Image (cartoon, rainbow, N blue to C red):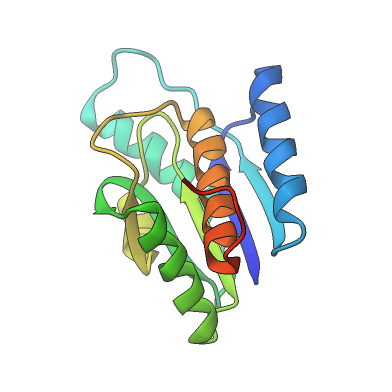
Length: 159
């Protein structure tokens, strides 16, 4: 299984980089993992709706450049479907059984994802109705992918 995480912005905090590195190392025995960071656009506090849309569109174009045509795209959006860890593991496993061996998870920037990216998504996933910092969301996503593989393999970790 090839898993790509495409995220907006660079990780800045050392503790987040270390967490991403740790989960990347752990996942290496289960899948081929690729993490792609696309530049985040300047988003001042007070922007018009049109300016926000322009920022999301520009980030969206950068994201879509990295999405392969054969990728099964999962967009992380608040309005997506929420799954338990077990259901998420089953979902990943089913994708593999169905021959979907390239999965791309998309994590948007501080303003979210553009309509074009959401339209390209094959699945919309939500981790919570709460909003999380997009850099932290990468760590949470990696942890859940790792947990999912441990569940699939019947290995201890998930409780």
